[in-house]
Image 1 (cartoon, rainbow, N blue to C red):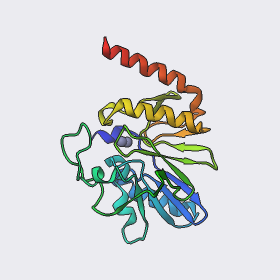
Image 2: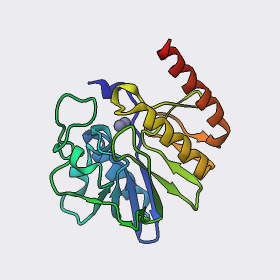
Image 3: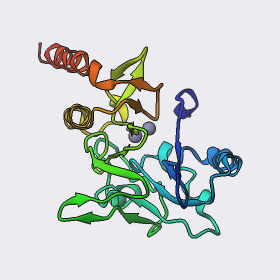
Image 4: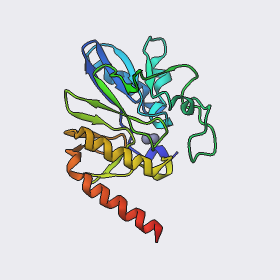
Length: 216
Ligand SMILES: [Zn+2]
Ligand SMILES: [Zn+2]
């Protein structure tokens, strides 16, 4: 199991009415996540929002919502891939990571994704077809899922092996940071980055170098 060597993070956001869980990690994380929410004492779990439907982000969903009325949201484009109806780009087998019909589409009004709890979803396709990131305005934090990985305090591309369209993912990443300029960036696989906008030029240069290397 390759997942064992990759750190996996999820986020719990305190809301007025309880808490929002952003992503749900691996199946074995269900107990730990539920325990953490209980210990936080900030009210009940009100909703789960997903950055995308890869197994390491949704594995514990089913267990966590069991016996509860907790809605689960993802981008409309991501749901058929995560439910095993469409093949994820670059994959050989359908993946049923989420049970059929459990996940609802994020609300969209006049082409714009609507806030869920205190979070603003931003469509950032590439790593997967319906990848979204969530911006928490009050804390000025961008919860970026697999839009980037981070190493040594620097932004890096998402893991190539699991990324459907790297060019699109890179462009999504650059425009999200440029538009939002958050104080903090959180990724699922890696440590927090302060002021990610400061590192965006390095990131762009790095990308151009890899691209050139591939062409030569
Ligand atoms: Zn992923
Ligand atoms: Zn991941």
